[in-house]
Image 1 (cartoon, helix red, strand yellow):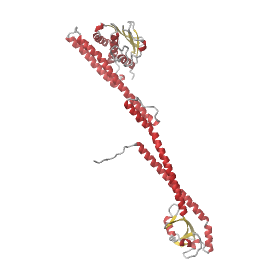
Image 2 (image 1 turned 180 degrees about the horizontal axis):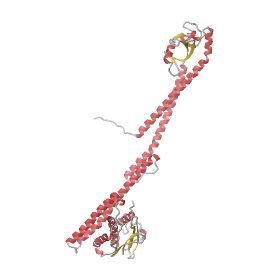
Image 3 (image 1 turned 135 degrees about the vertical axis):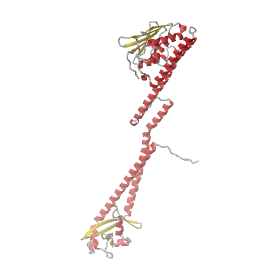
Image 4 (image 1 turned 180 degrees about the vertical axis):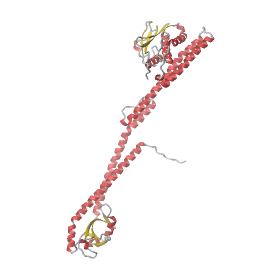
Length: 453
């Protein structure tokens, strides 16, 4: 079995290596340039000192009656303390000083020709010894002659090597500091990403609902988009959960009505079948309505005009069967021509929850009234003769899961569904005390409404 190691791809490693390479390249380039400039400067200083000595050299030649200097040839006995040589225009050696001969420096001009096009300083190497060379060209009539003056470069090279080592040592210190700064910058720069990873882990575990707002500007676009996505996801999840809870709540009433119809001995088989079929049709409509609401939200449902009277009559018959042990009298005051600016499913949800709540808490009387007001509003009022609702919990019971009477069965969903539905159509709901003695739920809706998200 062959084991292949594949290192993980890391963005930080790429950035770190790239930055370090760039810094190293620039650093070594600057060090090389500094060393080169320093070597040229020292060469210029040395050659300047040689140039300053040219009058002395010329005087030495004058004493030997060799004027100009280029007249010197091999064999001429010119007493000079300098390492010198003369060349013709082709850099052929013409003469060497006794000092150069004693040092066994041969073919000085020929060696210089091979380096004359390089950048200064110019070094001529003879064995292990190196010499600094300075060229002086002289035009004699139509011919050009060259005078080469050499100087021992050991001290200069030692100095330049020391300077080079010191430069690269300083460069190493700078690179070390740059490395530490890169590590610090990488740690500091990656901290927001580490924080983002930790917060995403907490989000996954359900320990956090959204990302923090204190991210750098470069990441705020991402975190804002993620927060929006999380918000949309939470809203969708909440909508799904609420729709399923509402569906279960609505079906529970229909199932109870179906059981009451089956147990009603006053109905024959055909009548029972007819009423059971009506309940099944209502349940089918509720399922489709709630599934559509879960997918699109309340704003995704189309505006319609629905007559509430037929729906209230159907609900009244169903609830009278369910609560027949109370012998409830449901009074209805709704004209045939009045229409609500709600979809049929919304009307069933609204009146189903309000009437079921009223029947559950009433003694034996419930009133339903729908009327058009002068301010282009439609008012719905559902009252009962039950114990009523205390003022301190009127605003609480329209929240999901909150019930006025914890001893009675229920999930605390119905009134919350009504409140959400009414708000989505731009209406409002208030809870008052009924003239019957119990609670009165008063709803006002604009005659023409627009859905709100």
